[in-house]
Length: 255
Image (cartoon, rainbow, N blue to C red; front, side, top):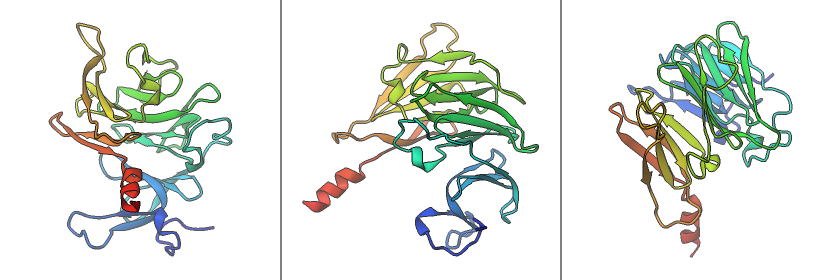
């Protein structure tokens, strides 16, 4: 059995290097996998191993607290361009007790301490999930998919049986094509990346009932570009929007 931690580096494109701010030359920990997520208190790390298991590391020493097995046949009949990657996004609850894992055709929410599967959220055949995210307060779990759009599930030690609220394409145009979501630190606003645009949503408007607070457009004149990452600053300021322009750059290089 291959140990994903500190093994020989035979597949460098699948290495996850974690650096300390005090030592940026040598990684504090090297993992073999394809994605990772830090718990809110930074005491635990979840990462996807090469076998598609999600490993929970308890400390920077590399001790594995728990392994979460992937569900069977999650890629079956899923029309996602990323279905062969196994996991497309993870999110810890604010207390670090729950971990939500996006397996495209379903989302698993697992209790880290007990290993219990708290909830499984599925989607009609042929559709898939784009993203999953706990709110900063931990009151909600938000899922983004190609069928329902945005769904808000009440969250505490468990997840509600039915979503409390749904936002679909009747509310936001092209929502089903969005790829990424991010909460502001207060949990009031949710940023949604839709192609080269960013839509800021007031998650629970108190007066008007209009979810869309405002829209930020980033258009660089590159056909087919799309935002692949986004984040809020600590003072609710929009800080980052990275566009996928590699193909355009490669075309320039070949000219």
